Every structure is written in structure tokens, then in C-alpha cells.
Length: 293
Image: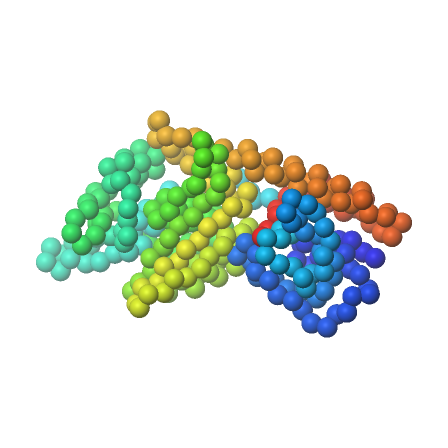
């Protein structure tokens, strides 16, 4: 039998005795994938086990191997200003174009201070009857192009419409709720397609849509360790004096635990049945491992 990280990058064993009748499909961490039946490694209720792929169920985590790491990316501050301008309108009486932030709930004074001091964006934000309005932006919204711009866009959406969840500075995850309506309804499919492309590169963001008459809200969240390390670094580079610095130590510890679990699992196998265990061990030791659920 062959043990390998399969076409979906999941640790599995090709067992010729298993019937190959049809592919089975799942969605984990916002990523949809399918495969024919095989034995697959899962982590479930704090223990490791082999199960048939067709029996993959709720609460089970699979081991995903990513061979290449995210490059050292810098936050594109222009993308933040463009994201601020994502919703805009024109005042026919004054002849002035303005942007607005639908469903904005953050403190305006501290948010405006952050924009100026951390990102060099000078604008006027006013909250009055009818919503939260922005004046003085120099950029117009454009759909991001390429990995660096898109991740800067996701981070900008989190700053505007979401938050990084943390406890005592230790990052737990990140999420946002994006209201989409009018001209921005078309952004829905662009975002979902971009999330799917990220998943193909081993970067995972879960999302779902809430529809209410003519309004759509896109919710997304992530606990992908690569993304959270990147977003934590960007946050720390731009944070105001006195704000909490973010760390990802628990994710690093989890990474080490995953490696040990997988290596221990390989050591428990009868090596006479497999001729490539050492090769798989090398992949585990050199690649980036993630548990998806």
C-alpha cells in the first residue's frame, strides 16, 4: 500500500481493497474538495485514527500539507484607502462626491486617528443621521489584483467591518461582516471566487452569505495560521501607541504538535507494508502542516 499526501494534499493511504464506486465531496475551512474512497488520517476528540474517506464527519480534522510558504508581503496602504471608498455616492445639492461606511460600529475618533497615524490616510469621517460618511479620500475603489493586493484587501475589510479575535494578545482568529448592496452586489462572486483561489494555494477562509430582501451580507472568518501571522505582523506594524501587540505563539505550538502527531502515527505503522514512510517523514518535517475541520 502507498501512504502519501494525495491530490488534495491530505495524508492518506491508498488501499486497493476499498471499492472505488464514486467520489465523495466535503467542505472544510471553506475549501471544497472530493476524492474516491481511501484510508485517511484524522484527528478526532484528541486522538489520531485512520478512517475511510467516505466516513469523514463533523468534528474531524484532516492533515493538510502545504509545500510552499506565503512570501514576506507588505501591507498595501493604498488598498486600505480604496476599500474605504468601496461604497460611494454623489450629493446633487453640493456637487460633492463622498464615501460611506454601511453598518459601521467603530469609534470614529480612534478609527480616524488610526487611519492618519498608522496608515497616513487623512480624511474626515462624520457619523450623522443616515449613516457614516467619509470625505477627502484621494483613491477610488478597484477590485484587487494579485495575491498581495487581495490579502491587503481582506485585512482592510477586517479593519473596517470586523476584528481580529484575541485574548491577552494571543490571536485566536479573524472575521468580518461585509454588507453588499447596490453596485457592490457584484463583488459577492468576486470575493467567493478569490477565496476559492486562495484555497487552491493552501490558504483557507470560510465564508457564508446572509440574504435579506435586496441586501446581502458576506461573512468570512479564518483561523489559518499563515494568514493570522501575516495579519498580526501588519497590525503590529501599524498599531497605535498603547494598543495591544498581537502574537501567534499558540499556533506555533499547534504546528509542533501536529508534526509530532503525524510522525508518531507513521512510527506506529508496520513499515514492512510501506516503502515510502521515510519520504513522507521528510515532507512532514520540511512542509507547512495545517489541520482543517
